[in-house]
Length: 340
Image (tube, rainbow, N blue to C red; front, side, top):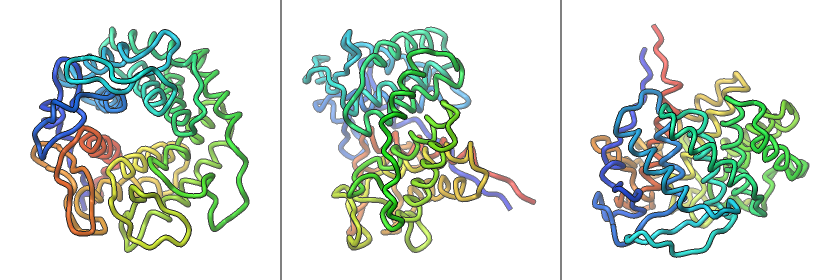
């Protein structure tokens, strides 16, 4: 028996990208150029472009565009702007919010994995600048730690990366002791699995089994909580708390992609089958194994659809959704198996 996952298709992402960056929004498959770009997306572009096992000139170009964009987004303090208009002007001020954390995630990934030497070098310099900062926002710090962990895989003594991971670990709250709701927030919100993944990543980097086990425990609970009827039923845009009705819509691809990333990382420290199965469930969500039985991507172009609703699919193919499906398929390909 063969278990396969579709390969990522980068055609739509390439079409969404010009010399400045990747356009944030699309009307169906057409870029909404007037809406400009954002650092959140360019950080994700850098991740998927540099961790793809077999890269080519197109992916090298994507990585180059992304690393230049993020360099422009950074202030000398390391804080990060997020939104650039279609003419190349910045629409906001540097801050230490999610875009800063995702920026560090992308830069750390590129510094560790890019096959282009100048991209690795530039990403390392930018990482060190951004890693001066610390955010009060849990998800911003969690994304930043993922970048630090990637850099530490190739340079275990990298001072800024290790300090960032150490400082993050010191902020992780103790388990709340509630088996029914062990999550460290009163409600699930967005990109939830990154909180558990960051604990796993920091625990491995700092050789702290207690920390990575806490991440595994939280992720196992989340995976179970976001599964219903044999498929993923992820937290919708409005969030999810104890007792909320299910399923909940509008479901977003980013939630599924974040869960795939976390399960893939968990598989590196825990041999149980639950983690490869979780990655495959995330890929299957895009292929129609979801609460509405709807395909959530265009297999011909690689475009990801923007949202799953009770009455159908938002077929706009923005950057975030497209990058979510590409990221998820990258992870799932690692766990494709062939059995006789």
